[in-house]
Amino acid sequence: MVADLLIRGGEVLDGTGEPRRLADVAVKAGRVVAVAPHLNWAAKHEIDATGKVVAPGFIDCHTHDDTAVCDVFRMESKLRQGVTTVVVGNCGISAAPLTRLHIPAPLDILDRRGIAAHSFSAFSAQLEQQRPHVNVAFFVGLTTVRVEVMEDTSRPASADEIERMRALVETGLQAGALGVSVGTYYPPAQASTVDEVVAACAGMQGGRHVMSVHLRDEGDRVLEAMEEATQTAARLNVPLVISHHKLSGAKNHGRSKETLARLEEYARLQPVCMDCYPYAASSTMLNPSKVDSASKVQVAWSTPYPQYAGHDLDEVALQWQCTRQEAAERLMPGGAIYFSMDMADVRAILSHPLTMVASDGLPHDTCPHPRLWGSFPRVLGRMVREDGWFSLETAIHKMTGLPATRFGLQHRGVLNEGAWADVVVFDAQRIIDLASYASPRQAPCGIDYVVVNGEVKVAGNTVNANAHGQLLRNFKEWI
Ligand SMILES: [Zn+2]
Image (cartoon, rainbow, N blue to C red; front, side):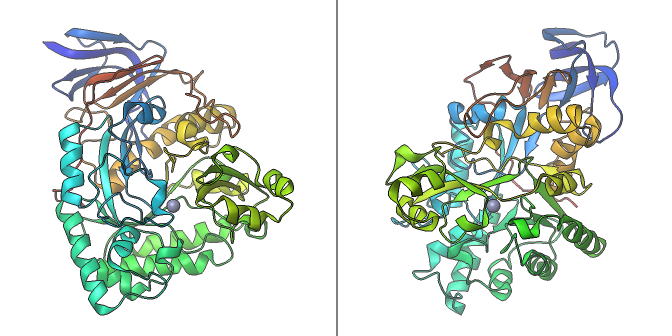
């Protein structure tokens, strides 16, 4: 038998969390056709993986890559980490459906130039036609929908507005969205109530769609925010993903004990899980009301003062002889990195069995948070190899099989016969992130090959320009 690609002699971690085993992996027509030791196959192309780990391509289940996926230079940040599938449209923010000329924060974290963002059908059709560089699944961002429908977002939506939101959400679900993302943390969605969200999302179907939520509060009122999110999902009868779970602000450090115990209680009653990035700093829009809760704030981008990207906000304030808050106001619109978490909480959350690894990277920032280029190898190099937080098998499961199951991505996130051939080959002794806050655009080392739908996309430092990704439309029945 002749395979298109044969990956020989590696230690296969199949994504399920089961122990590694020595095996060859044969690929034909984009699919894995055999996983077994000493396969007696010929192959058009072979990779010698002796001494290396062979795993399913990583699934970055929390991204803002909506408008970056067809741009190979932007997607290099993910591909070089071993990511072969991204979930876009998180935190209530999706590219479509938006026709407004003025786009308020945080919707401005996406660069919509060159993308058909006026409707989900146009957006998904363009992605399918151009082909993305990784596989893409998408959420309907409810804040985007709210901004599209409402002139004034500072109040709850009227019955008529909710009806228009519901209709727009349904167009997204019909175009193949995984579900809806909610971001009540952000100003344009803060005035929305549970009733409004439930009514706007009435088109979601239990057993088919998922809801991801950027909690209204990740600090003092985090438990109340978790209660709101779980209630919303329970009323809609859909699984819940709590996005980038964290405890912000010094006085909340250590409270992961409470939040994780509460999540376990919820998980006994309804499907709940979470994602997490392996850093103690967050990154989002520059918001003057949030800058004082962080020990340090670094500017990620600024429209009026682009030269301050990468600078400490306190330095800028000192130069301008003003407070942190005033400096933040002058730098807006912009983005920032907030040093506001405790690594012990990050460890407890990331180690929890309900937690998936995700980057939450912001691909359009001038000086982005290093999670954009570093999240997955950072977990494998620092948290697993150096610090022993959990096993390599568990880490790979959190990056592959677990998100594939929770998001219903069929035949992804596992390496077995019949799965799509998304594969990463890496050296478990060498893999490490190199991106830092001072120098964030650094590719990791230790990753040898990345295969997307059976095609070798990354070989060493080289990223192939041909696009092999697929739009993963949710047209299926799954549990
Ligand atoms: Zn978010």
